[in-house]
Image (spheres, rainbow, N blue to C red):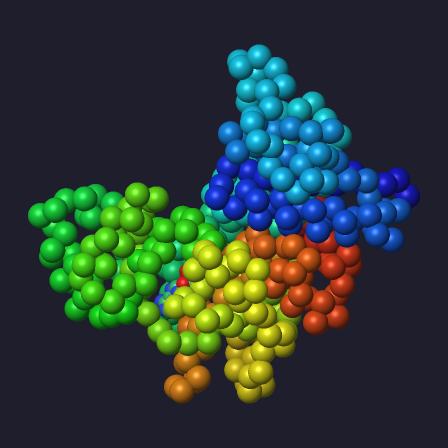
Length: 352
Ligand SMILES: Nc1ncnc2c1ncn2[C@@H]1O[C@H](COP(=O)(O)OP(=O)(O)O)[C@@H](O)[C@H]1O
Ligand SMILES: [Mg+2]
């Protein structure tokens, strides 16, 4: 059998550029272990923070150093800025490991679909719905998945001072404190605030509106945070359920990305009926947004009442050696190298 050439696509124009590089390093490592090594040849493609694609030695250098390029590499004249490297034509299957906007949201998926080459993960629709917290919540509601109360808010509403007091009155009446203010389209907790007073609410709305036109305000729950990994296409499977624990006020950016600030418990210590419900809801959410291949679905579990609320789906979850997604599968019997092989197979299946 001829080796298949996997195009590993990483970096990207999002706040999660560095996380993407870390995920790509772990995946590259998994392709260099047996038997993947004999089945696949890896071609690396690095998307710089300015959007320019680099292949070959430069992509390889970022992958081996783990560090983004400090200054943008300009391979050609500025008029060729958006040309893709010709080596994209050598790729048999893409593995886009890009997190956040311009990578996890359907943009890159649209490009890869136009190339008519199979790619790992969700297509345009699933990626776009999974990225936008408002669209996601509407689809989940339609699917009958339980969620916390929330309100959609626009940047225009926040900016119009005459509307603002009325808006805050309505949010307070509908959701009470504490509540969470979020930009609809980011990730990694960027722009998210937990607020307990009117002054904090106003500041949080301004802050979130600086990131996005679409905002969401949610009733806060005091709950355990559980995550479930999904793998498959039309008959997706759910992993064991994991739990995230931390000391901070909520799972914010610093807690997510500072070594030692958060811990994973895999599998989570839960009544079996709760774990089973979460697995079923994870698969339901996956299908509801038309996800494919891979996703991680996150939940709030209120132990006192037994309530489970779906929080979000991530169609390209963190994929470093210590990330929740591969660890959940490792605990469910699929090793990291077997997982990347399975994801590539699923990409070919879906394309066929
Ligand atoms: N409604 C809520 N109730 C309680 N905690 C919340 C709520 N919404 C968000 N959080 C906290 O904020 C974190 C980040 O929110 P999330 O919606 O998952 O954003 P992101 O997509 O950036 O991960 C969650 O993991 C949780 O700790
Ligand atoms: Mg989250």
